[in-house]
Length: 473
Image 1 (cartoon, rainbow, N blue to C red):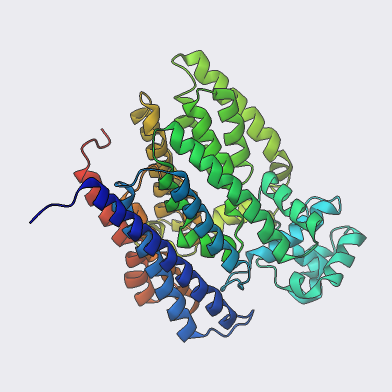
Image 2 (image 1 turned 45 degrees about the vertical axis):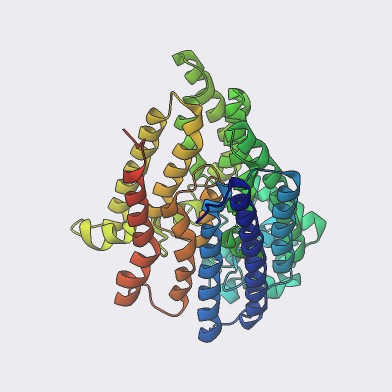
């Protein structure tokens, strides 16, 4: 029996690529239609929820199935155009959907309106402006409230009342606030305007990713793993999560490092910290490529610290107030946590404050991993995306909050590091939705849902890591 030639294999892989792209489009249409079964309401349509979980997992499985075929296909303008157009169609479909069981965007719209009113979103909690509604009159009476913000809350009463965690000020850093402000300037309190802004930023991210992949001598077709990613689509465009704002900073920093531009890299990394605080963990990693001397390292860290400090100053100024969102988030929040949950509830429960002890322990572990990966990859810039992906993976697995939209952080890195264990996180991510029908203290949730969502991918990742020719040494 004659073996298939390279051209036949390439043609078959191309056909499978088209089939998978079309399948994810159809599945995305299904998710968009299902979204209308989830109006803002305490009632959950469990049948629709099961459908969302199933379709989301199948979509991610389809994306994973494309990996072996990407290895057989050469990049071409026609194929890249198909990839881009298909991903754009997926986003266009979701622009007409409703957020599924997510309400963070109400906070985004409020923050943007506050900024454009000339006030700091870190100074006031939303509950300050409606004490009767949120039963927070004692705290509000101690503050002098800007009249225009009081009127703003009244004029947008429905959206204002849906802001989550209203007792704390915003957790989002200043660069993210600029995004909220721009959206508000386009159309005040308009979710479609926010989605349009995310779309523009994401298109820019796609082309930056193409450039970065080419600089690392990787086929631009690997951008599929980002551009067609179902979790990114559902959580970014379906739910409107702001984590998409982080992507262009992160991918540009990786690209600029390859081009040996350390100051530009430090500025981009500082910008990433201005969107979400966590990229500070990547500073040691990027620093190792700033030069071969201690002086170069010092310059990089100094420029990064100065820029990040200036960017974060408005938020840090209010960080010590009792209602500061960043402080509350870092000290008390826990949602859909796997390793952290095991530490707090079992391994470290012997301590009086097991939650705080677990946070300290996790912070030490993640920092140690980040520093170790920086040391491991220091002599080969091509290892940078791998080390960054592993750092983010450790953060996601050990964090007290395991929201599925956090996977956007690593989605932009998997085109450089398409590890099966990492990809399986996107398949199991929809299990998060079970928290809306099960209590997180429920034994089923703790011992079935969470291990399936994070434990199974972790086992697959460790297994694949052991099989790699060059592991972490």
